[in-house]
Image 1 (cartoon, rainbow, N blue to C red):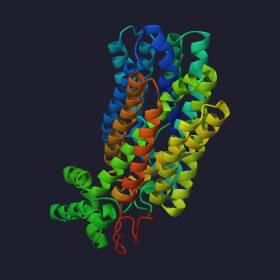
Image 2 (image 1 turned 135 degrees about the vertical axis):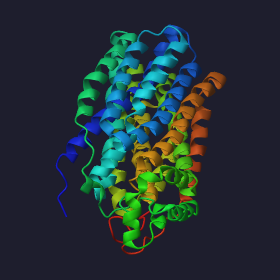
Image 3 (image 1 turned 90 degrees about the horizontal axis):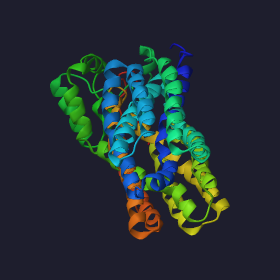
Image 4 (image 1 turned 180 degrees about the vertical axis):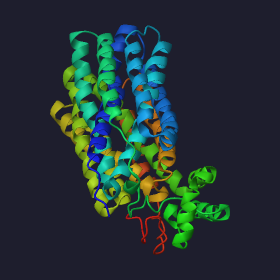
Length: 453
């Protein structure tokens, strides 16, 4: 049993920094909404639609990026994304027509950011083995730091200069921060992926007829663990032949109920919290709160989301990802509805702090649940597909908020609808059955394994 390589902490730090800069820029659109509306005469719904398109591009790109990182490594994928991210932000400073912004922020920024979250989360999980919950949470915590730092910074730049200058500064920062961090990334050494956790037992393996049997386990909702039964020599031989059957692996994953339960839960979760997140600044301004203080509300939720992400990861390592996920989803739904009952600045800051713990806490758990059911060998592909579906929800929620406001002149129905959809996410998550137990010695890394969820 070799000791974990110290360089894994460099990997984790680099992933945290990349996620902070990239995801943080996506959420600055909430700060740019009001000044761009006034400067260019665009409606809130039309600008929100850019956010919808941005998340669709990000989700589709994340699916591709997960596959490419499985094939070619994470560093090259992240480097390509960093170039696209910075260029998209710089060009966003020059837009004068709505379709320009679709290309620069929607397509280029969304495409750039898509290269980060899935590959970096999967890479961190592989480097940290049994501490995968902590690793996924630290990567995800970069979201919170990005929102905390970049939202107030963008608001200050807009106040002191203008929104075009703010985009230039963000674009320069993206290149100066993300590219050096990407150069530090490495793929994990082989021993780092051969722990005794679920990922080690997660490969579909064996001759074609055996893989078909494993796919049937998946479609019955037993997860990859249920597919990994049999004598150790069969499992090991099949694992070596895994690359020869990628189509069957993907088919088994995508046709299984666990995949769709995870995906639909993630979709409903993101639809529920994206609308309030994207429009909380505008909602606060409508309630008479100053622009800088309103941007601080979003920053406060970003700060607390850091603690939520790290905290749920640690809890999930102890009690399992599924029960932790359900608790965080329930808290998220309750906090969304709470915004309906206040317009006071102090109360909104307090609600934002708890809301941040909730929405931040759920995010790293989907990668962990995906790994529990489908293992490390296909985690990039499986989680990439889950991430794509959830990104549709992120875009839908942000767009719906703008459309509802333009139609009704209020965000009240946004918060009510988000509460209902958030409650639905709890119900969907509860339908996941624990993966079946692997018989002793059947796992790729050895040992009987059972999902703690």
